[in-house]
Image 1 (tube, rainbow, N blue to C red):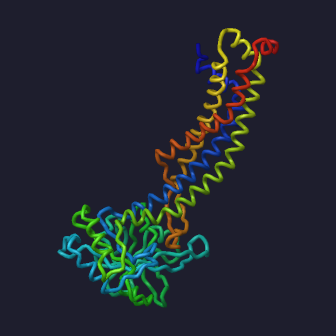
Image 2: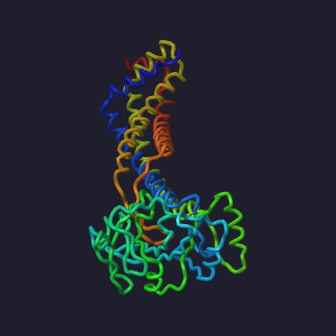
Image 3: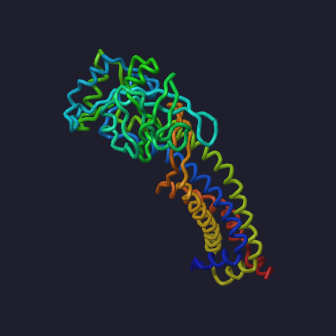
Length: 388
């Protein structure tokens, strides 16, 4: 014969103030735990969605990112000649030779500067990035000092808005358009004519060559041929894999930081739950004796008190997740360790994070309640009834 679930629930309701305080402490820990995981998930989502599974990124072998890469014009021409490259609506190959450099710009809300990616774009760059949509103005004219800025740049950096002017490379650059790339990393970039930017920054080589495959299934063959070509010293990656690799270091750092903080905070929450459950056992000694006298076994008492503690954890976890979900309304920015440029992204709540957070809260409840539950189950009937 088991003690009804309603018994544990009713006892938590009877001690409402203690329940709220204990669950609140657990909710705070779960909020921190979920928020850090959401931050890492948002970073990875932003970078992974930046890439397309049909596109291939070719960079110099050994380079971690486009910023560090360099591909000569002759090598770029060899790559461009690959027969597997898709043909666009205009009859031209969907390939873009691009240059990526960093500049420092001050933020709108403060004078503190941050690194921003400047991408030299080719005619096919927009077509290759279907996520990029021009929402204001027009594309820059070829051979001009005109640029377009991502939505996050326009909002967050001085001089990044429509019609404004940026000074870099000893030249004035007019912003003639604003583009929205959704939740991708392109929203934190500025784009301009590749040849003009190469002249400005005295870059004789491209940073990368991007192209779309006619058939994504041919990627292994294309990768093998390009990387084994004696004329080339390059590495080919699917664009999705390239940007996923870009997120790994920062996401891992965030997870380690989050777990460290959560473990420290969780110790306090577990101790709080333990104190609460010990107090419940002490106040209900007579009640425990009565239950034993009615025929309930030790394991029934143990399970009943464990259930109360698990319910405390579940309530705290649910509250923490509820408040953490509102973090999705905010956009934050941080430095991408791979490119040393600022990247804006949003918190992202996933099903996996929900499961992990609730599991973590239940674990806190279990650890906080197991010792008091064992104490309650070991009480002798006679000693317990004397407290009535």
